[in-house]
Amino acid sequence: MLLAITVNTKRVLFVTTHIWHTSGPKAGRVDKNYPLVNGHSGPVLDIDWCPHNDNILASGSEDCSVMVWQIPDQALTRPLSEPIVVLEGHSKRVGIVSWHPTARNVLLTAGSDNLIMVWNVGTGEPLVSMEDHPDLIYNVSWNHNGSLFCSTCKDRRLRVCDPRKREVVAERLAPHEGIRPMRAIFTKDGNIFTTGFTRMSQRELGLWDPTHFEEPIALLELDTSNGVLLPYYDPDASMVYLCGKGDSSIRYFEITEEPPFVHYLSTFSSKEPQRGMGFMPKRGVDVSKCEIARLYKLHDKKCEPITMTVPRKSDLFQDDLYPDTAGPEPALEAEEWMEGRDEEPTLVSMRMGYVPPKSRELKVARKNVLDSRPSTRRSVSACDANSLPPQVLERLLEELQNLKSTVLSQEKRICDLENKLSQYTNGTA
Image (cartoon, rainbow, N blue to C red; front, side):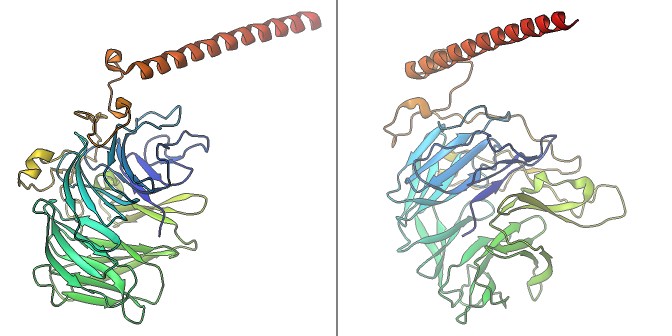
C-alpha cells in the first residue's frame, strides 16, 4: 500500500518523519526536528483532514483507536500528543478514516474487525455501527451528499450502504474478476468508478450504475502492472486521477455521459516511483495559473507537488474551468443528518481565488462515553484556565517555571559573555 497521506489548503501531512507546508511564505519541507503528532501507541494506518476545518485531523491506528487532533496554524513548539477526542469502539486496528462531505463533525471509520462505525466527533459518541462485511474492508467512499457510501471488501463484493438505515441497499459480486484488491469511489452523478484486476491480472477500470449492477456502463483494461490503482476524483471537472504504489506515472480520465463514458486524457510521467499520493481540494488550486488540480507525490526523501494546468492565453478568470466548488462550511449538523436530512455541499466561488477562513476550534460537547482516560483529551480554550484539570494546570505551571529558569540562565550567560568581550576589547586597545 501507499503511505497514508492527506492534503488540504494549508498542509501536507503523512505517516513519516517529515511535514510540508502547502502554501504561504514557508511553503516547503519543515525542519527534520519539527515536533510531530504522536499520540497513538501503535503505527498510524490512515489520516484525513476535515473538509470543514483545515486545522482538524483524524487518524486511525493499529492500537484500535481513532484520534481527532487540532493542528494549530503556527508552528508546533513541542510534540503534539494530546488529541481533542479519542474514539474507541473497534476491537482491531483501524485502517480507514473518512469525514462526511456535508455534515459537521461526522466521521466514518472502518477496522480489521470488519466493522464500520460512524461517529459524532462533537460529542465523541458512535452514531452508527454496521457489521455487513464478512472480511477485510479495502476502502470506503461517501457519495456527493453523504447519504450513502460504497465499499470494497476482500470477499470481492462491491456494496452500497445506507448508514442511517444500517443496511446494504445494493451489491455486486466481483465487478472485476481478479482476486486482487479493488477500489471504488462515487462520482458526482451517483455512479461508481472502480479499479481492479481481470482474471489474467491485468489492471482494469469500471463504471457502474448502482441501480443496475448487472452490467457495467464501461469496462476498460489498462495494463499488466501489479500495483493497486488508487482513484482521486475531481467532481467539478468530472475527472479521475489514477496512481499506484511503485508506479512512476499518473493517468487521468474524464467521465462523461456519452460513450465510451470513461475517456483517457493523458499521462504524467516521472522517473521516480511514488510511495504516496495526496490530492489537494479544488479550493486550494491557483486560479491565476489555470491550475485545475494539484497532487503531492511522496518520494523516499522528498514530497513533490505536481500541478495540472489548462493553458489559456487570456489572464481573465476562466469560468468554464472553475465552477463553484465545495467550500469549508458544512451544509448541516450531525443531528440533522441522523434525522434523515440530506444537503449538497455548500459551494464557494473561485473567481477571486480562495481565502481560507480563520482557524476554528473544534468543540467537544462532553467526554467520549467510550473513553475511560482523563478528560484532558477534550478541547480546551487557551484563555479558560479555570476549566483546566488540576494535573494539566500543574504541568503548565511547571513548564512555565522551567522556561523562566531557562530565560534567566541565558540572560546571565549573555551578561558574562558581554563582560568577557569588553575585557578582551579593552585589553587589546
